[in-house]
Length: 518
Image 1: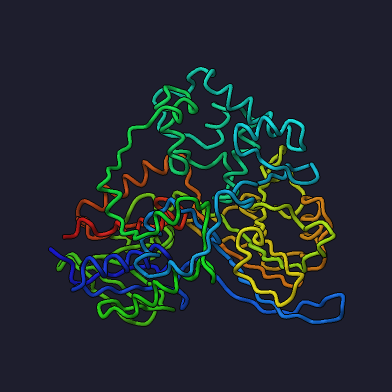
Image 2: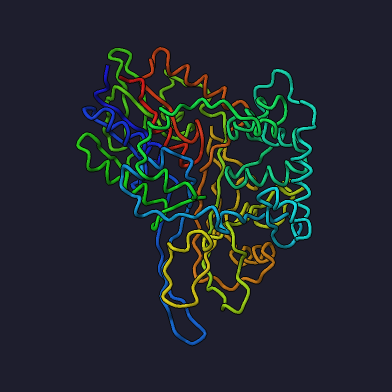
């Protein structure tokens, strides 16, 4: 039976994507999106700020920058996002970073306890030519770990169905590689401790490569994988000319930031006669009426909705809080959530005759300290993005000297993870010690930083779910329960807490919802 009414709980990117695709798939159904914030889009927040720039000549110049509190660039491999861009006619607003640019090819690490940052070799030739450079130790570690991996014995535990990321990298590439490269990678994506995250839920391609390679990850990647995707599956995405346009693109954004995608989705949905957008409305309860089999969704606006189908795009612990005890669901509080403080910094660019504030490149990450997080000194910097290298076209400086923009990420495993069940720990403080931050950044960059022209601090509390080992199996159990009585497949639970934290993962989850409802 086709749904006549659908309630979507949560108005982040997952919920908006679900509303977009469901409104096209079921044009006769009444679709209601309920979001606790008046602003839709979840952790995506793109804001413009204007300020003045004093010059040595005494002149005062105006400047305008785009500041991102959440995701700032996207990779072109997420076809579901490209499809939205095409369908919403946003192609003309794209800003692309070519694969040949320094922002694409140059990424750095700051090793705790050492001064400065070191470029990560990005190709086999790069590794070989790095031995005389300051990053020679990284090149040697990469070379010995990767070349030696195929000769390690097959060492996955018999019957193992999952393991932590750190366990996997230590087992196949060595503990040094796992701490330096593995933990830094996890800091950049999940703001988490790699010793606690599930490999199969975060990097399934590594697990699969080891299986294809009969115990060797390198051999698995070298061996052509039998692709499960058919050409028909690829054609199912309506991409227009975007696929061709993105062939040589490393990452991309929009002139007005990732918020462009959210704003376009909200505008589209508000224009649809069968879609109703409730912003600033909290969900107070969710139950299933045993007599008429309809859902009952109570809200803070004193309104009760009676949808025939429900999509929950809420964080799993929030769904647990509103769900009736009469219809419990498993594993909603199994994972913790990480909190991240994002600091946007804008500096006056130095004169052309002086060194730049950072090398040309995407930015740098900081691996886990050798003595662990609890013994670490400083503010707990996870990494820093050199925004001016990749998205300078988003900013406007009415003068010749220009500005330099960076974004710093703090917190994650350096602070206690928030327990999903209680959610009682304080979020990261927005009162960051800026002088201490500048001092630590200067040490890490090995360059003296001037006083910033603009500082913006964002506290993103409980923003990234931490998939602990066994997450994949737990989510399969959850799906199995939802497919059986009393749910009978009429409620789907999707979003970052279930299957992937990237923008592409969230948009794809929304795209696939409700495919079995007809």
